[in-house]
Image (cartoon, rainbow, N blue to C red; front, side):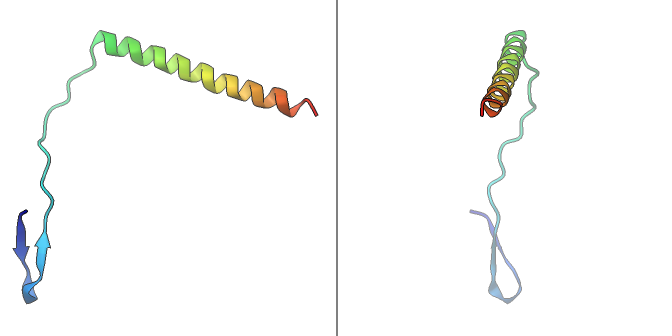
Length: 59
């Protein structure tokens, strides 16, 4: 682990830096999956809100 010695003999440790890489744009299949998951998440949230309103009006 790389370290430096500061004034007074204190050691200052530095973490390893991760490798840097350039992100690749999503493929068409990944874009399609993101759309499907987004729609599923919206339906789930909408369903939970619908159930909450329905149950709260029962009593």
